[in-house]
Image (cartoon, rainbow, N blue to C red; front, side):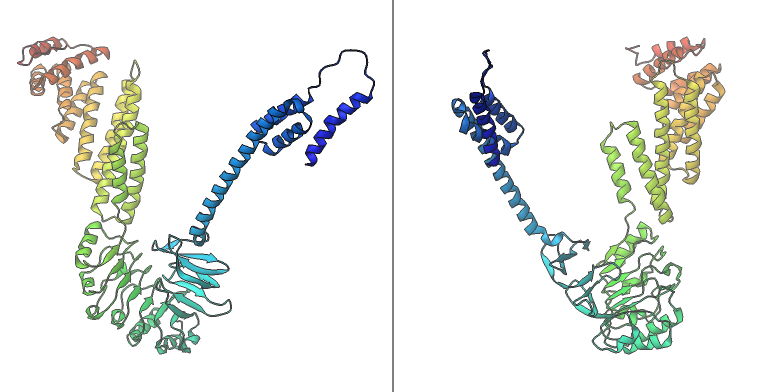
Length: 558
């Protein structure tokens, strides 16, 4: 309103001054202040400066009687736009409110353990929610470490200065201590402890109330004390979960599976792959173990004795070197068990499927995908060197990648008016050398041999153009030896024989090749291409052309 009065005072003041001051006796310009005010209102409306546009309109309605209708029309448009914006803001606010109401518990979520439960923060307390934002475990903890960070449990506190608890996904709380001396408190049912002395070992074994036990020591676990501890754990009937991760175990102690009610056993990050007596002992068939973690243990196999763990439902084998064939065998031994392992074939198959689905893909894009595939297979081959399928795929794709890279260079020469045949021969020679190395690593592989034979055939053709006829013959014969069904090589061989003056052998080779109309046409086209490449025509070429014209399938398009 102050702005309106200010505008009015300026305009009225101008008029009043004009009335009081004596004007010179000359013609004056008409007063356009109202028209300028209307123009300013319209411009503000166009710029979405709605408050300013409305002020201009209201000032005009007060002082510009001749333009009242125009100002009213602009003001109506301004008010309509303001109302529209209010509706848009209201809708946006409602959407945000609904979204916030639905997902307010997810705003502070860290990650979802097993894809279904996440730590969340609300009104100063920690709780746990699912992916829909629904509360699974109430917000009642002053501090919390989410599930699976290290032990597979959440670690929580109800009071800042109170005790810690291990929390499982069923909402069960286990009072936790990290001090062996505190195990004498019978309310403590979970312990994270080291065993550096006999006293500590005995303190653990005397805590018959323990349900969960994790052994760890940053300075390394004493193996003698550890094995003696494990011998005594079979007398702890309440123990349901035992963590021996990264404790330096190189074998499984025979009493490990004799713990009567043990359901979960974590043996990850040890060196059990060096063991020759994995799962030894007669206690396996008595075990009620449900979950076993053997990840990152340098394992390349699992003994069949594992099938004696008839209650086993979850087996983690990630980070080992067990071939796919053996994984499938283990699955037959444990038909009711979910086995977690790395599928080394899934991602390579996805890349190959992408290549196959795009046959018109550019050479550069194709090379990029084969490079990515080869890099991935190299990594997998280091992880599982005994996996024959990965080794085979690696060298096959190395061969295909080399072929595509050579093809790129070849295309660059073929697309010019005067190809550099020395460069084309060089590309093929480089490819040949690479393929020979791959063939040494994977002898007699059909894919590698196919590309190697093609390479020799191409070398034979370029050697012919470069007047190296004997070299051309040798390359062609080697290509046919590797892959006899590559018939184009036979045509190149016939050319090399003809240009060496070996007419009888050349004629017989041509006859072996000329089994169709297409073959005859291809031969005549080759002669034309050789002429364009300025290869001196051998005097016996007309004899071959005459022979072709006398065949049962005459050429219709020369």
